[in-house]
Image (cartoon, rainbow, N blue to C red; front, side):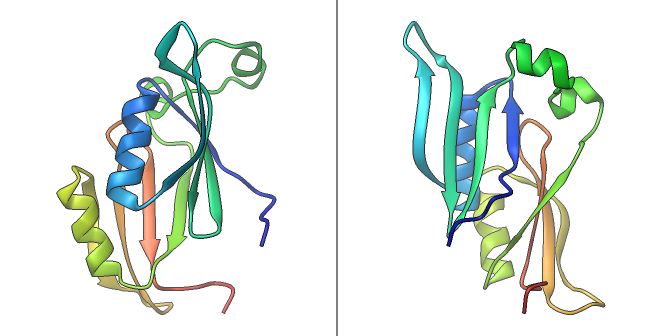
Length: 137
């Protein structure tokens, strides 16, 4: 299934962020377009998780960033969105994320609206929530 809403995240150290997202949260690289002269600059990357995608890039001052005012959490002084992903085993996922260096902001817990969930911060400040609650079910 193709999903037409794809979050786009900017990172100061995009190659390191891509590695973290794959190791900690279970994403896989679909495509990574690094600058041919500087592999630390990622112009565009597509990471997939199950049948979902996020796009990642280096936090460069591009015309698009200038027009939109795009910022990393550090530049913004806080997060501008929280991403939620449905997982089958919340506790196992949290343990994987913790082992890979994620900062667990909220330990796995049962939610009053159903399901179980936790929240984590990646190394550059983006907040990710994972839970067994499926709003589509």
